[in-house]
Image (tube, rainbow, N blue to C red; front, side, top):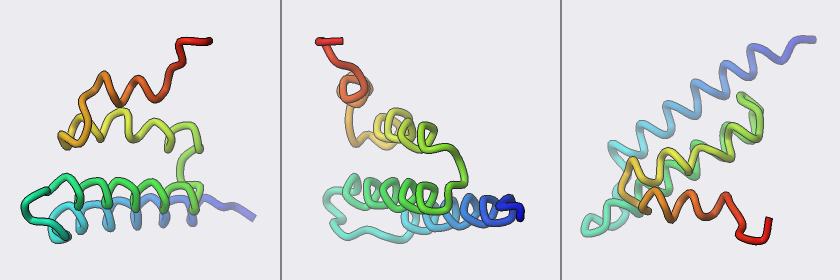
Length: 86
């Protein structure tokens, strides 16, 4: 049994939910980053649950989207992915 249709549905649903939340969901008008972060989290959750993309790809989404939506500077977002110990 192929899981390909479910992966496509998961990707489409994730993108639709993400776009709808970015456009329409604004829980705190004075801080638009709150709604954008919720949209990113929902997008990642849908991708993770549907396994539309590998988990490693889903884990890298904040590295791109957090600086893109001005939620966190790029250096701060990237610092979560590296360790000075390793």
